[in-house]
Image 1 (cartoon, rainbow, N blue to C red):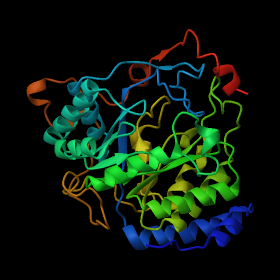
Image 2 (cartoon, rainbow, N blue to C red; image 1 turned 90 degrees about the vertical axis):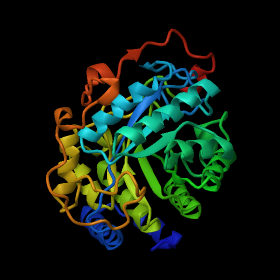
Image 3 (cartoon, one colour; image 1 turned 180 degrees about the horizontal axis):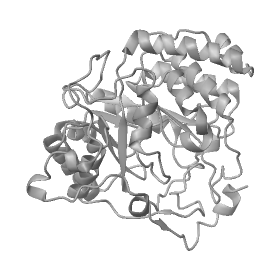
Image 4 (spheres, one colour; image 1 turned 180 degrees about the vertical axis):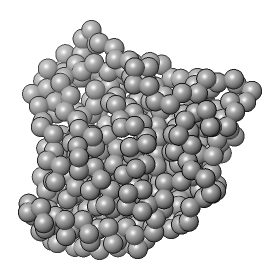
Length: 377
């Protein structure tokens, strides 16, 4: 579906600062969201299956070897560990689960672990399955589909005109090729980016319309968390009203995309998170993020329920990758604890909900690559 506003109108809306005018914009975005999705939601969770030591130089990322920031570091998880995280996500009320690995391509050994992890999640949970593992060929994308993955995440990160500021080692065109390969393999796409990297309002609109051309099923929006030791570490957090305004603008430009807020929403939005939901969100990333802590799952569910949105698990969650105007509550509530989840079965897994002390163990980097000091300027 084409955008509901023009580029010119998007730029005009991007210039407003009066809170009352922003609230009017939010109401407009809310109507667009409800008209297309009713009360359906699409809540995600992820596991940082392989963390740290990335060879790429993305300026926002603490996992980069080019950055001096401390970050969680561990090798690729075993498939059974991925399943344990998936069970915790399901118990906390997530609808879908994404296996994420740093870098722009996996070794054959690590890729096989992701495939087996996807098979286990498909067999032993009712979660929709996603993967975010960097660049890939059509052949690999097809292997993911055969293993039970339904959607692949691969961000453009920013507008094409600003992208050279984001990375010099990962080309924007390479990102587009991966997205095209995922589509060719018959998988859904999850494509978004990060706001507040230093881009202009014009470049935010540019990115939104570029995403409209890509037409992904899902659009995750991240808000920069400035991290010491990264290229963008000297940025300030985004004004919460500014952030909510841009969520609404993106909703009007991409009216049929499944929108979710991911990294940085807590740090940037604070008490305005519920207003961001009304600005057009279908869901949020529940639990912890890649290198930062998240909110408690019950708090996230409450934000949506207060607007009359349905966060209960639906009968079709494992079979229908997109909720498309699902409505109506299932009998019973989404389970609040792992004790109510399905038995761990033959693996005998010890399922826990998110425990920040165990999920994000930071490792201090002894040294960054020599150019890290230059990147930090």
